[in-house]
Length: 232
Image (cartoon, rainbow, N blue to C red; front, side):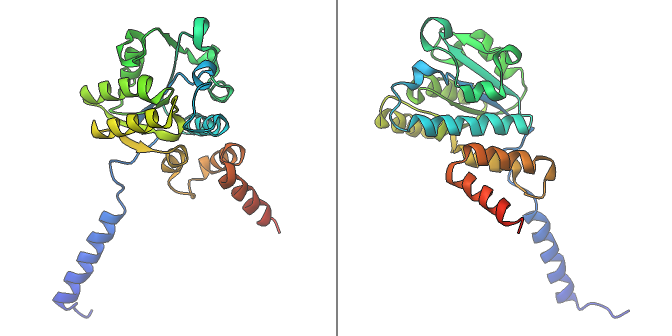
């Protein structure tokens, strides 16, 4: 057998090492098993004054993350504020994937869910150091738990387009403040696709594409078209 020239051997080993490293994803990425999703106050009364995003788009985005978390079996907490006395029921899109009867919604009086004993216990009991949060309003009920969780050593992600506030300035300043505090931002579509990550994952492919067809807007229409086109 012909011996490899040393420089060539070194190049092959270097290339193999680079390739191996390239296949390892960043620990910053979300996976189905490394985080807890917390849905905060996606309720009718809280949505009425939201202006930074249209309510229809907001509901679709909430459906994407709720549906995505269900598909990938992500530990998920649904918490409400003053459900019976002021804020009303959660969005139908939340109930679709997490019915109240089987999901044990945690109702609070506190604006900061981190200060509510039951919510705090439920979130931290999941044992995940990464927490993904979305809800209403960004400047009050999202800023509070996000900064509080970071202070307690958690790595926190905020789904910005599944949050809303009473003005664009309120939403934008809240996002800026959370970024300054160390939170990481992402969108609803990004959340679901980060969990799927590879279209060869056939066990979740159909459910994910169906979710986008139903709630993914123009992207969902594109998926529907490609599926139909592929039949011919």
